[in-house]
Structures are given as C-alpha cells and as structure tokens.
Amino acid sequence: MLSAEEKTRYSRHLMLPQLGEEGQNRLKKASVLVVGAGGLGSPALIYLAAAGVGTIGIVDFDTVDPTNLHRQILYTTEDVGRLKLDAAKDRLYSLNPLVNVRLHSGRLTSDNALEIISAYDLVLDGTDNFATRYLVNDACVLTQTPNVFASIYQFDGQISVFGDPNGPCYRCVFPEPPPPGTVPSCAEGGVLGVLPGILGTLQAAEAIKYLTGLGESLVGRLLLVDAFTMTFKNLLIKRDPECAICSERPSLQGLIDYEMFCQGSRLDPTELVDTPNPNPSEFMFFGSQIPSITVLELQQKKESMEDFLLLDVRRADEVQIADIGGVLIPMDELPDRMAEITSYEGKDIVVMCRSGARSASVVQWLQKQGIDRVYNLEGGILAWSRQIDSSVAQY
Image (tube, rainbow, N blue to C red; front, side):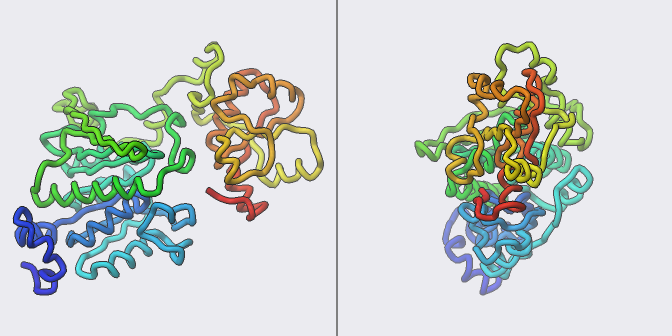
C-alpha cells in the first residue's frame, strides 16, 4: 500500500486512470537493474527514481570525467573524480529518498552477471560496448529477465525490449558483433549531448510501461531515432528460430568469454594482404604484438629534433580540439595518400590518435603494406595530455 507521503509524491501518476494506485504499487514493488551509469543510464535512473520504482540497482566501475558532463546529467562539476556509483546514489536519494538504491561496483562479467541480474525484475542496458551488450542479453535470456536495450552514436539511436517470451532477443537481430574497430565509440565519433537523454528517457518509459502493463511495448519492434532530422522509424523484428541463445535448441547453454567473442571469429588479418588498397578502418588486430612507444619517448624524439614522421590519423575536427603537431592523414584517407608516408622510408613513423586504439590498427595495416619502423603511440593524445602537457585538451 502507498503511504500518504507516497500518494502526494506520485499524485500525478495516480490521476492517470491507466496507471492509478494499482500501477504505482507495482512500481513500488518492482526492481530494475541499470547496467552502466553513463549517458543512457543517467536520465533512465533519474526517471526511474522519480517514478517510484522500489528498488534500483546500478552496475558501474567508472569515475566521473569532465567529458561526461555534456550528456550525463546525473552528475555535476563537483562530482568530477568521484565514483559514478557514489555520485549516482547521492543524487537519486536527494531526488527520492523513498526508493532503495543498490550498488554493484565493478564490471559486469560472465562470473557475476547471472547472480546479479536474477535478483531483478527488469534490466536497462546502458552499456557502450558490444561485449557487455551480448553478455547482458545472454544473461537476461538465461534468467528470463526482460532487457530494455538502447544504443547511441553521434545523432542516431535505437531502442527495443528484448528477452520477452513473446519477442526476440538481441542476438536474434544482431547474431554476431561487427568486426572490432568498424563501429567507433562515442569517445571516437562523438555524440550529441541530448541524444542519450532522449534514448535513456525512452528506456525509462518502456520500463515503467512493462512493469505496470501499460500500453504497447517495443517488444518485437526496433525504434530508430535520428535526432539530426528528428525522425523516428519503427522496424518490425522477429524471433530467430535458430538463435544461439533463445531458440528451442540453443547452441549456447551458458555465458561465454564475450571479449573473445567480439574480437575473434572475424576476418583473418592475413586475408587482407592481397586485397588491393584495403581500408585500414576495416582492418582489425587480433592480439599480435603492436610495436609502440610511450609519450615520454615521443617527447624525447621531439626534443632531440629527430627526423621522424608523427602521423595523426584522427579526423580534422578532432585536431581542432587537441593538437600536438604531426602530419594529419585521417584514417580513411590513408590508402590514397600512401606516397606521403613512403617518402619517410628508412625513418621512424609514429602513429597517433585520441587513445591509441585506431592508431594501433593503422600500425598493423601499414606493416601489411610493407612499411617498416612504424610505431603506435601508447595512450594517444590522452596520454600526452595526462603525462606531458596538461594544456592539451582531453576529449
């Protein structure tokens, strides 16, 4: 039953004939786990707490960074450096002290996912990587827990409800992850600050509807959101009778190594050797040793006036944010500008990007093109800012 205080707080809900006191009591008794307290998790958590969901669990391991603040509205400037879990808990209790917030510190893994997820009625997936998305999906299917999924990139987003007995799971729609590196993260590609607010709020709406039985859910539908043109498109999606996890005869009986799953079973790098002018953005590395140097070693090269090529493979707009010199050849332009690189034959080539991920794939691609003495800058621009020159912006 609702207390007098709860009836006052949720009075606008109670006035909705479709929801009323019965629906609000369902929310009070419900438990929702939010995986990831970032761009999607921030608005979702705020609205779940405001709506009076009785128990809200949060899985996260990160700290608040200044680059989070343009979209992760759960946090303020004063929270920078704090664990997101601690900051989130304080914010949610300040918003609604009547809810119960449970914290799960650390990463969700194949070792703990089933135990954590099975304790909740519903999961909101606010993750930003494919390995964890597949982990969340599979754990939800195995524990029969609905999963409100969303993802974002630049101006685009998508959302659905997976894991319902009458609908598909994430694997039904996306049986395998894309090759590593072909889908840039928001850190590499950027994201419109309000986009996760839109998608995270939609996730909270779907959760509230699902828990109370209101309206039509996104089970069996994938909603595509284009914030650039402000258009929404519904795609009908069906359960795959051959799905590896939710079919009648699943090939997966338990959780697996998802990092390996998202990095392996892809195109063998050796197959690219004879490909005419392959695009390095489509090239993946699979655990082989990448020649690299540290930012301290790069600083020494600069100070000694050594003749070498510092190759920046970021986009031009990224250079406007942070620049430490070098020759800019964006990753997708490399095949057409190889002459600029081969002119440095016999000299060291240091490849850099924002964090060292894209540049690592470029190093191995250049090696396949016959380029020697090529090295990846460990940690990229971020490491340079942290260890050498703090005036260089982190983004």
